[in-house]
Amino acid sequence: MITSTTPTVPGREAGEILGIVTGEAIIGANIFRDFTAGITNIVGGRAGGYEKALREARDIALREMQDEARKLGADAVLSVDLDYETLGVENGMLMVSASGTAVKLR
Image 1 (cartoon, rainbow, N blue to C red):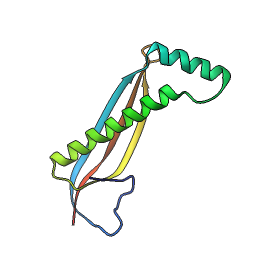
Image 2: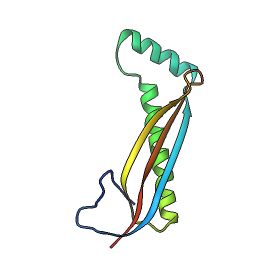
Image 3: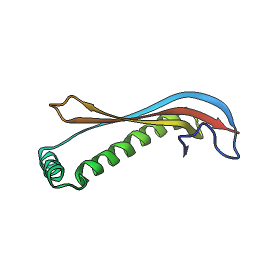
């Protein structure tokens, strides 16, 4: 399935707009990852555990969005937007949401 942040696909035309599709993933940050990130923040560097978790959440959100588009009979999802949010400071939950427009290409 073609998935793009742009509103068009080069060389193709959207024949029919099927609707908005979405996908979400919520992940919890565990204590070990929090501890490691805290040390990384003190000594500098990247928080690899968080990066991996966000990457996995993004992939899940995109996959769910594409699955919803397939159910509508779409060939592509255009104008895709990714959002990252924290859900409460104390509970350590992170949410990634993907949304876009499902289209049938000509």
